[in-house]
Image (cartoon, rainbow, N blue to C red; front, top):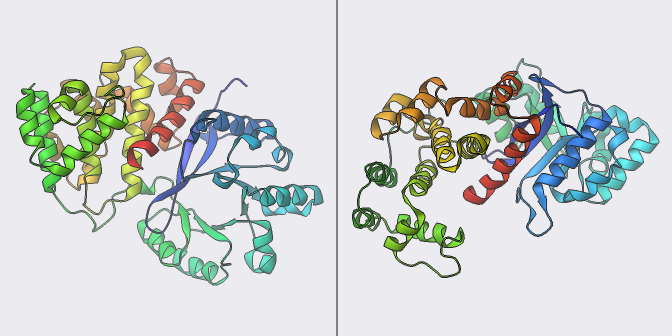
Length: 403
């Protein structure tokens, strides 16, 4: 099916702020696309084709995918191509009044597919709930979310997980977390968490930054090796990365000098950027780290066709740096003063301009269900299918590097 819609993701967080799943849906010009059976079947088929590999299995590892469903698509063949234990279909409770729909839902549940019920009267469903659903969505109505969450939690069934929505402030998230309710958080994870920032960098990040500056200055390999040797954990991570990524071509690389030479300076810089974010201990939310990696990788994949691999690696760095101020708990101008970046990356970060900026802006728009997605994609001559494939590929790649 020819794609005219763009994929938008919304992370589902557990009470520890870890991403346990994503809801994926189609958007057109920033508005949710109509819930037609054909559109939803196309979404299931596309996701199955991109995220399930016959040899590697489920590319999102332990993450669950939440997909909207209507009765007419509950028997679509594409559902058989998704791993049932990682698939959750969300359906309106009123649809279960139809005996055929109820039977279809029960058959899916028996096959281990997750079912999330929307608009459910939990008190009325009572003991029947675990037989019908694995999740139930609880809707908050703006006013006193804490009181509403407590009421829902009192009705909680041990076999059924509760999912809160919308959760738009960290205070509301904390109430959900304290009651054991998972939450879809929309844009919340991009909002700095009050009172959790520990300013500055830890020792590991300081060494990583020093190495980044040395790479930028084309320092000799022995000098880079000398700095790396001061941090055993860093040296171990580099050797593990080189050997698992297949750079050694079947032979194990054990020397740092060999590792640096094999990798090359630009890929080394990109790896250090990733490491700088993952070495953060500043009380950041795990979802923020995952978002930074997805954003960097998505921006890179969007730009690789037009700009080539070397330029795309710079776009990855720009994408990672775009959230580094929140990951490190320091203002962006302070981040940019601590490391020397090329003028193109600076322009992308500060203005979303230059050659890299539009790709970074498009990757951000995919997180926010923004109406800018289609216009930015069109300006870069990228089709919805181009952007959607890159989006799912970035999600899968992120599981490998952060898992």
